[in-house]
Length: 237
Ligand code: CTP
Ligand code: CA
Image (cartoon, rainbow, N blue to C red):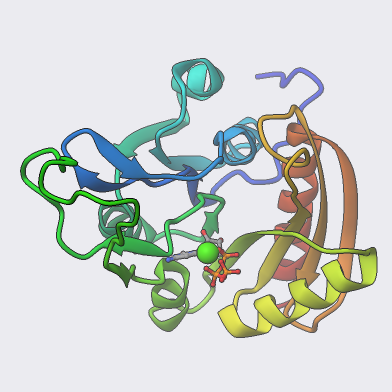
C-alpha cells in the first residue's frame, strides 16, 4: 500500500494522546475552565496515526470542528472526558500497555471542593465578595512517571508566559526536571499569543536538559517535530 508522501516510522507504536482543557464544575451551570482549544493535541494524534501509530485520543472539551480529522481516522480511538479526575482515570487505563504517552491536555490545577447540587444564588450569598474553596487535582503526569513501565516514553507540554527566550527555556528546564518526563514541549503563551491559533512555536527539552528542537509552524509541523524527538530519544535507549 503506497502512503501518499508518508512516513511510516511509528508503525507498531501504541500512543496515548490527551487534548483539550478539563472543566471543573462549580454548580450545575458553571465551571472553571481554561483557554485550550485542543488543536495541538489533536494534531499530535493525527501526526502519529498518519505515521503508522495506533492512537488513543482522550479529549476534554474539544470542538467537533477541531476533532473532525481525528474522528474519521481509522487508527485513532477517541474517548471524551470532562474533569481532571475523569482524565486521570482514562489516562491511567489507556497508558498501561502504551509505548508513548503525550499529555497535551490543559489539566485544571484545582477543582471546587464542594460542588453545589443547586445553582449558587446571590440570594444565598449576598455581598460583593465571594470565595470558592479549591483543592488541588491529581497530577496526572506525575502519576504516569511514577508508574512508568520499562520502555515507555512520557511527554509533557507546558504553556508558559515569559519575558524573553532565556526565561522561557529556563522555566521549561525546571518544569521538565520537576515532572521527570522524557520530553517536554514548551510553548510561549500570553493574552494574545498561543491560543486558538493555527500556528505554534515550541522548544523541545530532553531528559538531559538539552533543547533538542525548536520549531515554529503549523500545529501539525510542531506535532511532527515532536514525534521526531520521541523517535530520537527512543533510539538512544
Ligand atoms: N498536568 C497533569 N496533571 C495536572 C496538571 C498538569 O498531567 N494536574 C500535565 C499537563 O498535561 C502538561 C504538564 O503536566 O503536560 C505540564 O502542565 P503545567 O500546567 O505546565 O504544569 P504544572 O505542574 O501544573 O505547573 P504550573 O503551576 O505552571 O501550572
Ligand atoms: Ca498547571
